Length: 329
Ligand SMILES: [Mn+2]
Image (cartoon, rainbow, N blue to C red; front, side, top):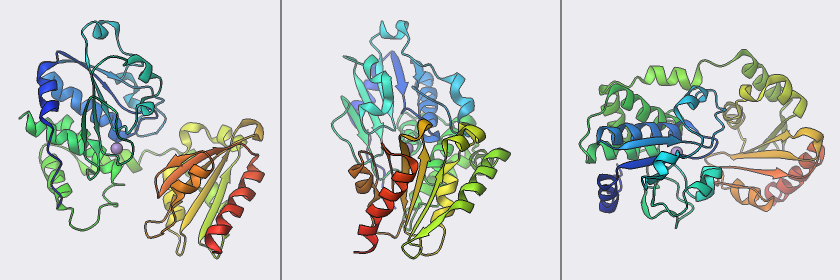
């Protein structure tokens, strides 16, 4: 097991000292970000602090659309008057909070995060790159402040952990501490069954049809080491943005034997540009983050993306050509 990072004393001191806290997560929020915000607000409320939850949105992922009413789009004026502590979760750089970066000038900022990239942001930082989710780190805070977990808090903490581990699929050996945490959360009222249903059930009919279409269209390149598919703007309009489930599409494509890299090209309106998504198999040495960066995008070694200013047909040809250097070498 890997022991959690110790909580910095200055973080404990700053939370004890504040009266008002604004809790912000990243734009295009996911379940780890939102549930970290909600659980942290619950902890601070129980410590007698006034809290505001703020997110730049948009709330598009199906499992989180119903969270939107719990969050404000801007920092409230009455909070600004109380010199609030700004707490940013699940963000490795200030630009991840979107336009809210302009609203936190001159306020004390605390960052709680588990990404390894992007340092030097925040006045007080608690960064644990070995933590599988920020909710796992918030759970440590509950224990440090000796605040018991309600069933709602336990549910939120487990939801974030389940999301960022791909429902525990990304956890390798000797990481039993994660399951020790899961055990405590389940015994505090979290339901793995309900969370699985929220994450993988409740899908729309249209979303399954769209995945079927995109999988049927999939092409093999370089003896099946690269799989590619695409989505036209007309299809995005027809099926609806809310019915897009690219993570499931990526997982299905990566599950094909001998596949090392997948490329997904989504056409933008007017066919003047596309969004390209890249994923690499866990065992592959190929760094798709570096390849996305060549096209002005970014991401991680295993997951990345870029906006490419060409038509869909040109983008596909360009990317196959770029990967021919990788696979023919
Ligand atoms: Mn996260």
